[in-house]
Length: 478
Ligand code: BES
Ligand code: MN
Ligand code: ZN
Image (cartoon, rainbow, N blue to C red; front, top):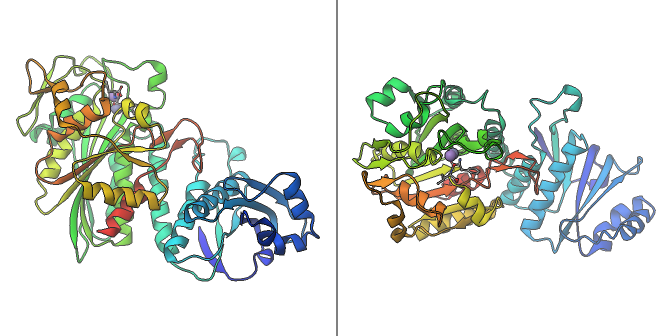
């Protein structure tokens, strides 16, 4: 997408769709446009009860009275920063549904950060996954965005971040027939064209040699071989070093503890954690951020065949923890454990952040507007929550309550791979903690936010790519 700026009056800009933010001081905000419509715009707004409240919108054909073919008034209420960003998201999504390829966005003047966020929000809203739609049913992505503002600030950065998020969404949306461990690894391999990035894949034989028991067990019931994706990003002048870990279950049938059909329907999204860390790594590296990153993805397909892993199996991990399998559908934590143990080994790294579509319990607790955050570090929690707020991604801290470790007790191993009915998202996080050593750690359960069954807010149905912008913003803040 080409991004340009115009300090011209917005009524003159030639484009498909002009999106104008209108606040509750309606008559002042509309005066200039209203004059071009001989007062009929305010009459229409009045009749349609468009009062400039946040979330309201009014689409008007311009019949040649403006440079734009169509005008979209978007309510911005009292004009808070968040309302302006939401308006940009609405503009992006409307542009897609109106088949506009040139959008002009006019929501006022902003600094570099604000402009950045607007461009990101337009991109979030403009996204659609139409790979499998007939050509006639496809809608065009924006080719040009004209920001009506005082200056051309920071949009290069926004475009890089937006592209990374869109890549994450594409990976999540692609069917499991397309994205399986090996092809996910091939996608990750594309990152090696970015300066400073190297990608290494541990295939099944290497996983056996390294005793990655979790990835192997989850993957052993599938014809698609599992692997571990390992990415290093080494910037020239690193000021810090972190590890990212992602759950890459490319399809989760539940294994022998099989999911019912409706629970399985969208389980291609179960590599959402992997897609998220790939997106973050891409954004950070493409931006040249001065933080070294080691990224680990455990990629496996959780399927059923004569060799599937079984209930009662015991997996002994490289740190000596023996895990008793009580449910093959609690597989995400099993693949993450191997990756966390690898991340511990990165001596120079101070933090580990893992991302996983881990528990239905998290979705039950906080729904799809939020990612669940588990960490013992108040500082890390504050940093991540601040970044999430700035990018309008929902993040909510949940208890990492150690006494609940009791629920993981079992007879023959150290821990079992499921807790009880209570606090399922917390017991999953506590399971993971058995594989974290001395680094500052956060676990982000994206089971709800990573994938939407139905369009909501600026998002179409499917992968949302949430946490890519939040965590990239957090890395920028380090
Ligand atoms: N991939 C699922 C979790 C999930 C559920 C992700 C809904 C996205 C939407 C995970 O592997 C799983 O099956 N978890 C089980 C754990 C249980 C067996 C302890 C669950 O949540 O039911
Ligand atoms: Mn599962
Ligand atoms: Zn799963």
